[in-house]
Image (cartoon, rainbow, N blue to C red):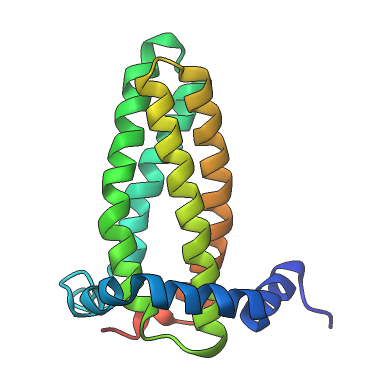
Length: 175
């Protein structure tokens, strides 16, 4: 039986020398922060699993809600979409730190998949930062476009992170 497209993508990312290079660069650039994240209260198994996956629900929920308001809320929803975009950005900080702490304990293909997941979430976060800046400058159309692009990138990142947590069991390993 042949592997599904999703399985082939995950395998390629897990074997990718580019993902390995990304992980090595992240280790060099974020080294002290990664050490702190691994020891922080955000890297805990107090709930019986990593706190990173439930924190992603807050971040992504805010960002997806902002995009829904952009699409169906009209002009009266612009302020709410801006608030949700900002709230998602604020929530992304502890979410990323919790994920970084988890990533420090990965090796091999899981580490490479995690590095690609992290790089994609960084891109999504910067797109949402662009969305917030555009919205605050009164350019709600550009803000909505940045947010839509951010959600698309976040969906790809979530696919990789979900694979780690659900298929590879990395969220259950504890700290």
